[in-house]
Image (cartoon, rainbow, N blue to C red):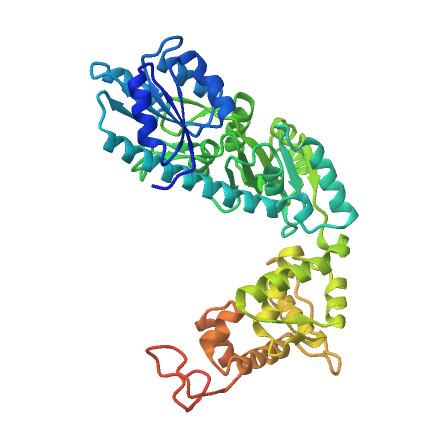
Length: 487
């Protein structure tokens, strides 16, 4: 067992202190004390990670020391030593936070096993802490893409109140990066060492969201086969991000308001009050004020959430940030896919001046697609416009006209202007050529099913020229014949 941890031995018997010092000095930096009333001061000043604690000490009992360690939030792992006739007290000590206990006269081999497990626990916690620190570093305000004046104003405002417990309401269009701002609030605050959890209120059925937020007890409802700890409880002392909070039902809004006011709740099916200290950050792409006026959102909850309002402008209103996003996503997906793709100046200018109705999320998707599809190391303006045209076709197809809306009479298409079908067919053929006429690979790149791909081949009468490669294991594609639509 290799260790560079500091250990404090607290025992009133000189023989025990000497024994443990000799046993542990090759693995730990060992200090000793003989009185209970000096332990807390030594722990605070000495930086010890482990405490071996005799429960019967002069000055202050071991149990009282444990209580003070818990109250003062001193970070130390405690192993209790107790007499053979005092096992019940040792078990009580475990409830107060002791890691394990040994009975005098204790087995030194067992003690070394316990300490080995503690060292492994401390090293794992250290690794987790380092990973959390690395993750948090990427969400420091200085590292978030946003050099535009609007974003800098947001960062400046947040920095002034970041260490308070104030709720934050982030509004803005979909795809503007609201969750990134929520994580920035957490990882720049004094809660950063505690959990960050998030819930998208638009994706969870209303009859299940209560369980996600507050948890439930075993048997609380059909299917509740075990206890579930909710996000509020998991994120206690940390931050809980409620995305698209406008989707909460009025009933759930009332429950949320009560938790914010009382800082306590009961799990579904339970009767134990659970105290929490969780910072709430919420987001919405809808106007909550308008929903309040329409009686679809509680006014008291709105004002409770809107202590610190943050409006994220759409990407088209912060064009200074677009070149930064382009380079960021190029680096990200070049690294992910093992490519070395760049974008020429004309294409960059076009991307910078594009309207981006899907905001940052759409820009990321376009850069990712360009890297996947590019056959050259330099992406041209034609490549960019081709991908964007295909995206616009998909977005237009999703917008369905109301049933009672009159359908306008068809108009003659000007010469030289392609129809949507013509553009889609041209793009499909280009994609197929790029992927050597492999249907499955092309379908995955287009984010459509294989069946949809075959339907489009039939619709546009596209003939697939086979290659020697077998497209899918277990099928006959790639045999060298031509594939006729409808085969």
